[in-house]
Length: 532
Image (cartoon, rainbow, N blue to C red; front, side, top):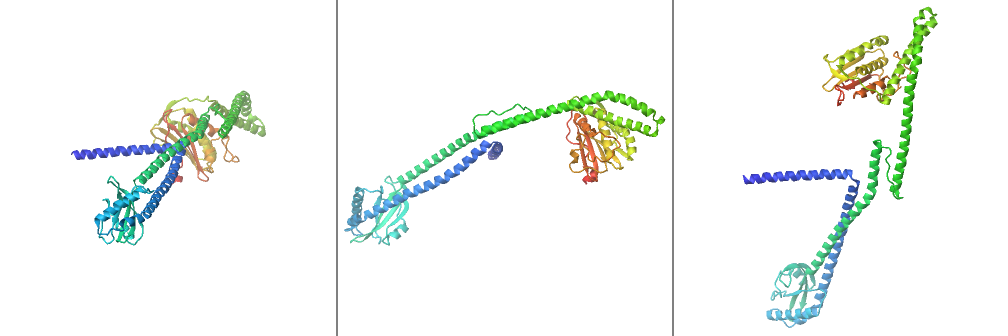
């Protein structure tokens, strides 16, 4: 049981460690993506670290090789220098005379160490090739067999192998062997040099190189952070200033200091901001003048239009007593006055939206009733076009919505009139659907349709896809633009789809409760028969 608990605890610890590592990785990734300063500093540290590592390894290898080469050369020199004293010391000693060999080795050691050398401390071992003498002055690791094989060929041999220090500790060493031929017989003389001092020197070089490399990398990292900060900080200030400018604060400027490239960038940015501010203010002024002109002209024209309307109705009522051409003129005058009044009404409505004076008169009503009234009001226009209207009320149940019924009905009448103008005598379909959060109505015609890109233009003011086409509605070119504003005022969508030869589909989607948020529409924008 205890083992199982320990295993469970280990698994929990591993899971927590994994989550922590994953969290740190994600945090590091976000910092990498978002911080130019961090990327530059990290890249500089990595590149510098690799360069320092390669250079350090190269220097350590060269220094180590040089130290060992110098030691090897000094050791061989020592062996060559001791060849004559070794012959002299061993000249009268027979290979089987162990006491004589020991005495000769002691004498040789004293003579060689007293003369001084550049090879450092060493010990001596003597061996006989014919195995009659196998004496070593100091105990320790045996002489390697392959080294002895070379010495037996009457050649000096050098090999790295473990040796003993004076304190009896086995350390890395260098062994130099040479043959010594005397009148009494042949001997093998071996010099054993501990490499302790050399290894300490190499370790010191490695430690120094490591500390220096780490210090250099850290210093480069600090320099990279400082240098990039000088570049990144003005860029961040420029980005923050640009965000505030985009948010509408046109008075924002970058503080200029110095005369370098960053200062030149700041001055250019400020000049651009000033130019944009002036252009936007000029456009706003022109827009206000245009809106005021439209509103003033529309209001001023209503008074004379009322007088003209009274005179026109008088003439229109007496047209039967006029000559045929005068009666026709009275009819045309009345018709064009109707168009003129519609244009003035649309211009006044647009001016209200431009001035922000439009407001809703909300009431909770049945959406199907609004659609039914709009369809009924368009029946006479459909008859003049020779087009049938097919209305699908959906489930038939009451769908209560909070809307301005006058504005919504105006949207539907505009959509139906637009569909009748482009239906080319084919039926126009009106579909209604609802869900828990939204209601939608789609007006579909099977006429000429829209060209690519025109679905985004149909709601522009005074835009017409085919100006040469005759229209029975006498449209002003503002109906769809006003409809779009009415939909937005409700927090809804008004969208268009169309393809050449496939007709067009206009979809109005409104939240059921005023102020609600739309995520989707109960009806598709692209008709199912086309999408399939």
